[in-house]
Image (cartoon, rainbow, N blue to C red; front, side, top):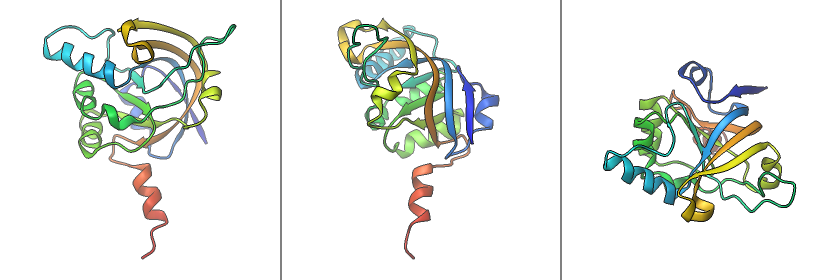
Length: 183
């Protein structure tokens, strides 16, 4: 069963999500990779505002390709999430509720997901061309000089993702390994 989820995420929505749930996300999300995360962490340390109101928001770790004529964006596949692990707990403390990428998260990030009631979602690696069709609008809103690592605001419709880590401590990757472990 696929759950249709409206962004931004709310605590009530997060209560209903469990590791393994298939989602279709519609609404606004942001793109930010490790260089943008570093800049946002530095801004917070200096008492400066973030380039967008992070409360309830979702960040997609994506490496966008240039758009071809007539397209909103080029291929929009996920990048490895672990590169942002050093910054993610701080952003969750500020209100970040969703992260989308590929790969496992560190224990401190998983602990912060439980503590701050957030969620980590996986996007399908290798499906960037298909994922790009769900992006209806894309605009750079901060750190333009970072090129592909700039912060972008995306409007998406039925963006596919799978819950990996939920607010209850569920971990799809660990559950998958346990299911096939030979005793």
